[in-house]
Image 1 (tube, rainbow, N blue to C red):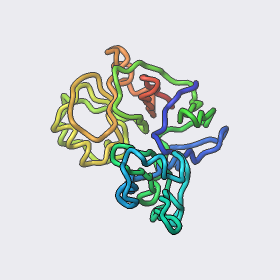
Image 2 (image 1 turned 180 degrees about the horizontal axis):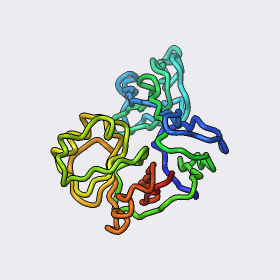
Image 3 (image 1 turned 135 degrees about the vertical axis):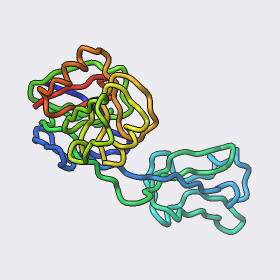
Length: 241
């Protein structure tokens, strides 16, 4: 079965097409960038609206320390503005007279795989990853706050949730009938991987997916599937073994 997830902006896939990937393997990196402004009009003493007459670089161009960004003719020679940064020219603002350079802030962040399967295809322009997964059970979602997946663990809220142990929660996607703030706090504290539910809204940084049909939720509670994967792009999930 094929399943699609969309990777974040500035991400780089670390797995080749056709390769098998398991939960915990390195999947992609995301470049952490910050935008820095260079006040060209101030440095050259020009009207901001005239900035395009003076810049020597184009949007999308990579610049390094020392790259000439803009010039202004003087009686003797030119006045130069050189880059003090390494990055990519993101935009030119003719109202403020500034160039915006996007630079790498620190080391890339690596995200590990939250599914088992094969890399079937990758559309780099749309950052769309197609995964081939063993036959499973697909179900529709009302919504999802983020992509998520991993080992599935069912939590029965009718029981005392404060007795839940780390081995039931840590690193797993918790299947819960209704979100409740005290329960979500417990899941966060014990390093849950995400939440799959049917109703309720609670503020959390964990990926949360809401199942559309109650019958699908009931089927998942029966324990026939070991793993789960859900996609914001597909707006659906898949349970598999």
